[in-house]
Amino acid sequence: MSQRNVEMIIGKLATDEGFRCRFATSREAVLAEAAAAGLELTPVERRALADLEMEACERFAARLDPRIQKIGPSRARPS
Image (cartoon, rainbow, N blue to C red):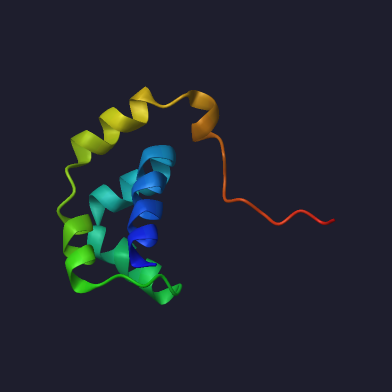
């Protein structure tokens, strides 16, 4: 389950410029917010996210289709 949370954060870094800027400014604060919101990360995963190379995230984001970057969190649709 936790690997999925790591991938979610990496995906958000690639698709949300505001989140990426906040993360670049204060990684520990963003990770603390995620934990307070119930996102479970092990100490090893938190350290790996804290050590992410921001240039790699920016290169990845630049290669994404712009339509993907506009997608927000999915919401349940009424049946």
